[in-house]
Length: 434
Ligand code: NAD
Image (cartoon, rainbow, N blue to C red):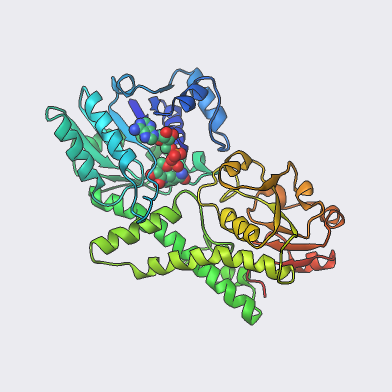
């Protein structure tokens, strides 16, 4: 099948490359000419494990193409995916749908045959209706159906998630569109991935419900971690103890500095706004957002306390900047709030991240970036682990100890054991291990 992907970002590029890998012919369209030029030169504009090889193989096999011209991209397409950004709108927290609606207008102008228009971007309930209205208004003659097909991949494991999803959600009651979608995803349900057909609004809301539930799970264990610290309990054991219950499940029960990233913060906010607009407020998610916001500054206070109550003039080394490991994505990373709060309190920050430095430089000022974890520890009054990259899990701790000015480690991801760290002579703090 011929497929067009509008937006060649984390979701569009991964989905496009995976569809091409299944044998479809995919054209990725992006308005960012620099991104398209880079992709044409064989450079991958983001860091996602395995993506460079997947893109290269499918470009070579002539199944994956890149262009800035939607007209060119849409000529033969049976399905066109909208995979553009839907960030928080400045000021009110609603999803900013301007990129989605612009894509809809672009599609309306370029459409030339029956086309299934698929919204892959995370969009509030009713956006599909508006996309349909925009296309119909611009091109009353066009033959098309608008489908919601939210994406559940996780950055850092995006290819495996796309190719082996827990489920594929397709929101449309149009039979012809259902057939096109079934054909498109056929290689996947040969692998037994369940395809769930629902009404379009249901699919749109399901994506937000999923992200809000996961954000709630994280926030729940973070508050349990705070209580563990007060009562002398261990949050990792509590998480194991509840997670082995099948009704709860062990994933997303890792206490840490609070969730961040390109999805949970903006999607929880957008869900809250939708729910308020429809007079069905979701108080539990409102609380989750507020607890999570406060948590990041609380993590900075934890570092300040570990340093005896003041960081003025102190050197703080930071390991990990991206919102999670195996990505270069810095959008709403907890490191931003934590580092900014430490700087406000007078600390000097030296940081290391395996892939995130280029993006970090765009959002953090006055940070000295270094190439190794050891350089971040050198001369530091404290070392703070913010992102649990594998490369930080087996550091030469004796060397770290020798390099630091004072051996204080604040591990916000619980990747080391308190007893081992104490035995090595560190003053060690972690999350929820009282
Ligand atoms: P991104 O910012 O990485 O990519 C969006 C791309 O769309 C950019 O390259 C931009 O230049 C391009 N674009 C914008 N308007 C365009 C237009 N009119 N025509 C062509 N290109 C255009 O965003 P992302 O992280 O890939 O997220 C895309 C959507 O997928 C969002 O709604 C997000 O919530 C959702 N989502 C993201 C993830 C994730 O892990 N990143 C997971 C699931 C769902």
